[in-house]
Amino acid sequence: MADDTSPRLARVLAVAAAQGTVALWCRGAVVHVPLADLIHEGGVAAGDWLRRERDVWRRIARRAEAIEGPADPASRQQAGEVDRFLADDGLRFRNVRLRAVLLQSIRAFFDDRDFIEIDPPALATSPGLEVHLDAVGATLREGMGGRVVQRWLVTSPEFHMKRLLVAGFERIYSLGHAFRSGERGAWHNPEFSMLEWYRAGERYPTLIEDCETLVSHCAAEIRQAAAAMAGPPLQPRLGSKATPFERMTVRDAVIRYGGYDPGDADDDDAVAARARSAGLEVADSDSVADILTRTLVERVEPALDSERGTVLERWPVAMASLARRFDDDPKHAERFEVYLGGAELANGFSELTDATEQRRRFETDLDTRAAAGMPQFPVDEAFLAALAEGCPPAAGVALGVDRLLMLLVGGRDIEEVLAFPFERA
Image (cartoon, rainbow, N blue to C red; front, side, top):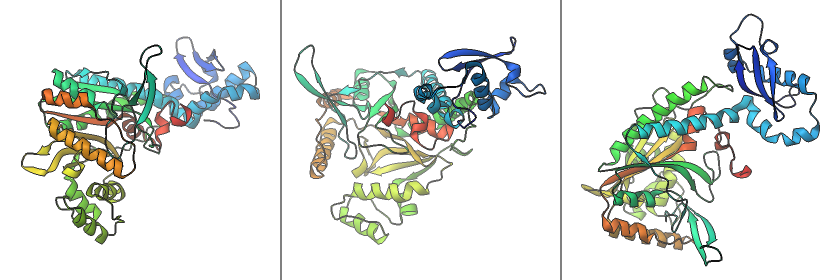
């Protein structure tokens, strides 16, 4: 808490009740302050008081000021990181600590289920070809003075994870960073933390169950950890009915919230006409995928219950991405997305394992990107070769870790849960 009574803040390092002291971190040094100088009279438990009373930050600052003397303007400028992390009652300082709790909780969740953590590369030959994603390029040399090569920061570790499925791994997860250009907003940072996991021999409904259980597990761990930390109270965006998730098809969601029936979404002109009749703005060049994406963003997502998790499943094949088609309904794909607290949290599939169909989809994506004047990226031939070698039936899902932390602590902007958001990296 910053105000004119606390020109800069001190950080509580430890409470030594037996010795009657509190260890504070002030201006690059540890200061030991008598506990009696910081607590109210009346015998209130020191730990609870220090944790719960907002006034403690002002009291600590006053005591540190008396011990160390007033801060000069130059030292205040040097203390910018302290001010940032302890502003808003220590919100960001607490959230960085809770991020560590979240990462440990995620790893424990998967380790307990016999998954193997994988460390895929961040630099790749191909970043993926999805039409609505832009990659970040990197130019580097092969060896000392070697030839210059072009690589890309991955938008997802998906291709490498599936190559491991081909190699014989059955339950794997990755917890690392992904990169996407042109994405910065309340829910987006160009560099972000992504959790991705795969189960060989499973279909996507199993992963929906994983998502439900994981969210509940992490919420409980965060609540317990936050109760023992200084800072403002948690204001999670998840209600008591967050799980189990409500499930509906994309078609049903568009009918209910978008105001029109897209049918099987396999006719651009028919879907465009129905969307226009429902009041949506549709350009002549818009494809089915463009129209449905706009419908989801502008009408469906804002209408979903913010306190309850929602799964949208059975996506039109035009939006199949890397998902396989239903055997009994080839116009739709075994894809799902999880929405929670007003945001998309996870995106998963029963995986497409047919190399020929995958190459056809890559070519379609490249044609679409070219028509829109978007950058062209190379096809990942090693990935296609692995599929041709033989990939087992599998299901996989990617989940935004930063978004999950925002939902669990009540973050308003992604920068509140990142130690160094894009502007400060």
